[in-house]
Length: 339
Image (cartoon, rainbow, N blue to C red; front, side, top):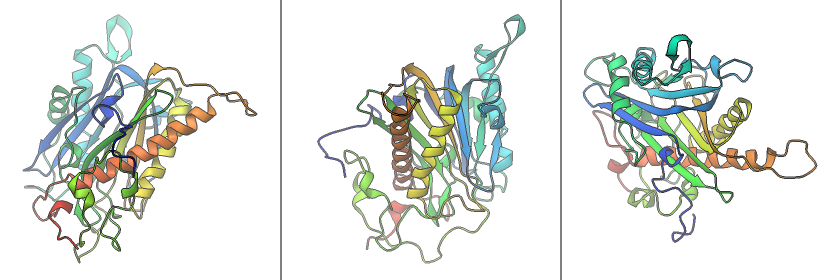
């Protein structure tokens, strides 16, 4: 673990430590579902990497480096499976009212809002949560650039991870070169975040400055019923940086961030998960260049960003599970018996 006297994360240990980004949630405990919106109203270069075999997404093709649009104004992480993607419509409307989006004729804009959904159907009062544009608008209205609530909130409200309560987590890291990298993730995985042999998270050793709190010190006994039944899974998230990246570089960071998902959740990227990670680069700081044999002088800095993005995603996944609260039949880590 990191030296407890040295903090390497940002002031909030959250995605909002990246300048230009704010985060808002809408949470419905009755529906056991919700929405998390990541706003970048000034625009952020976007990338995405989809590794799961059962994704529910919107506007991911647009982020391909060969395609036209460079920047997005928001990313939506939502519960509700295919029904929940409608929340992105509300985010588009909210941004359009503020004039944020891809510029069109006569002062009009087209807000670019990629989205990904996780499967939490059947966990609330009705099988299909009453999600829609209003949930997206409420999440936007709640967004700010300060501390980010985590646990059973937003897109992580009805999440289940390897047979115990999943949730929403976030983490950040300040690199030695001055750049900030951060992650936010909704954990609803088929695989488990907890090593059944030790009763502790697989990657507990990545903890920084006691960020996992008292729950991070516990070893628990997992429920005997085992992991959740397919196909009710998927882990979705966003990694972000204040570095200046192009779309191909943002896609590379999203790819490397999946390593953090695979370390924290075992197994990952299964046939029943739709694991999707976005990358946002707000471009506030230049990406350092390093002289060397290779013709790409920013390659080493990109390597370090990708490493940090993966580590932040791992830590965010652990925080999501440790901070979750039990809901209905879903029992949280904090309520499991100690070994």
